Image (cartoon, rainbow, N blue to C red; front, side, top):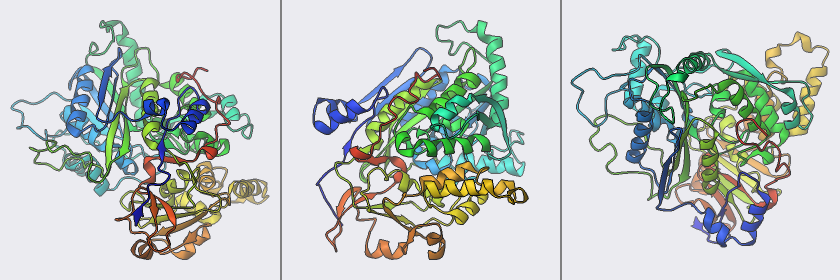
Length: 588
């Protein structure tokens, strides 16, 4: 393959106060003063610690050593390793491996003396540490992490400790597993409801008189209840101006970690999504996904504030905030692609380590680190993410080729990011070719897998008609309600999201699904090994525009669709420019 320099993509950003004027200015003058202001700050670094202990850091490359300095400084502000009796970390699962969340989780665990230091001699005295420390990956509907994924993402020290707790051989006498598996169907509590009017508005009136249920993993909610009570009891003892570092021996600390990047359901991933969806329950996840699908994916993706995010923000304000809210913190990252010869590697990082650290995600750099306990850190992360992860193309590709790393993508539930993130770029009747050697199933959840195989990716109208037909079926009462579309709205939303609505064509090339299975859900099929060998050599394809050596056809290649959002101006629909915009705390 040869790389083409024609029509190079332009990076741009949606300003949180509104898109149209900004986007028009960039299109009219892509090399103008506004575009220069929005370019990532190459080679620069800026950090600011605000009054409440937050940290915002952006740079062209935040190395592991710099990251560790920032994490340790933040935790120092919270009072040090002995400040909390109980620490719960909520990182994403392996599907967000590029986020660097595994590395951050490992650093937090080392700070709280849960694992041996990677670079120093063993302590001569027993170090202070919380009596309980657990990690709850935000699985959402995904399958639990495997032992191999835990070891790769979080490092050998945490993996080894988890295995000893599971086997009951923990050296500190703690019998609780280090890594807790979230069960979105069972291990949740409904902590409150958001008014039905917001649901009605977000779905353009399709859903009436239905509140949105705020649900959390039982473990998270029990700890949150305790720390809210502690906040009230110790509010008067906070004597410092910021309240940070003055409250000792607090029972619980919750740290939610994850990457902010354009997302098909919430517009931008993470912040309170990591809690209300990542460790949320079936009812909330189902309704959230359905709201996103009905509202319109093109109206959500790349918007930091939108009607669905507003619902989550209202829930945060009503149910998660406490009088002295310093116990629930968010550590958010922004990740950018790196050239093959410019991966985020610091030769000094781990130089003296004798253990296998959490692995560095390949071909990416950490470009932003945002720590805070309110929406300000999310807003800042959104701005940087849209500079880096929103790729505005000057013309529609007629052929797009997307590669799905087999270590990260095992199902179309995950792999359909190849469709979501490119659908606003590809030309009418264009061809999307998805090279997916690791895909072996449709749903991450077994029940959803059955539904996808039954109904397929057949378009919005057809899937909604199927749901109505099912509702109207007089024999419906005799069927298993757990397998109804109405009770699996996240599956309905996923099948809507994964459909092309007949506008373009998808050729799915999975390594472990048959031609009959792929065509049975509505996609075209081709052999992935043959295509990689004879047509699309991923080792030679460059990210972006390429020219096919045999046909001379121009094509656009994406190495990892999870890292961005691709669009052309005419398809970046902003009809809903004022819907859901708010100050971030649930207030219009």
